[in-house]
Image (cartoon, rainbow, N blue to C red; front, side, top):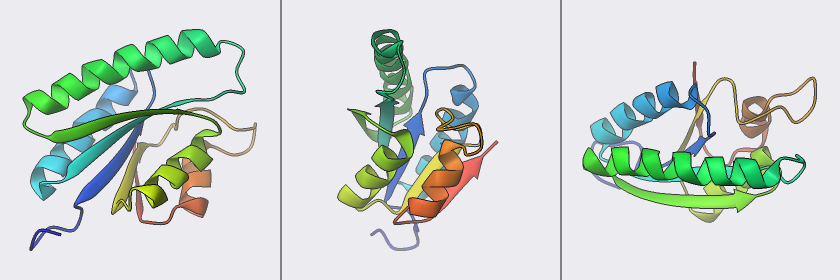
Length: 133
């Protein structure tokens, strides 16, 4: 890890909706200030019937965000996976040995009517989780 920087690798799960843009701005500020590598994750929740539509929307949105980060000089890798969002996020964080998961407060989707994806990620994460509004 670079001297003086806490987060060498940051995982940023995104959703293909406009509210994710605010989280992207926060992620950009963080990774620039920390000189971090960014892993941008788009999760296709296989439980939803509109899977193909969300997969296409997720790919397109992810490509737009990747371009934005690259233009700002950030080293970014885009990853797309399918499955339960909270589990996929935590598995990738563990697999890639990330230092921080940064995600929006509204999460990727609701797993059920009582628990949000960010709440579940906080419970399962192998590293610190920063949730931004």
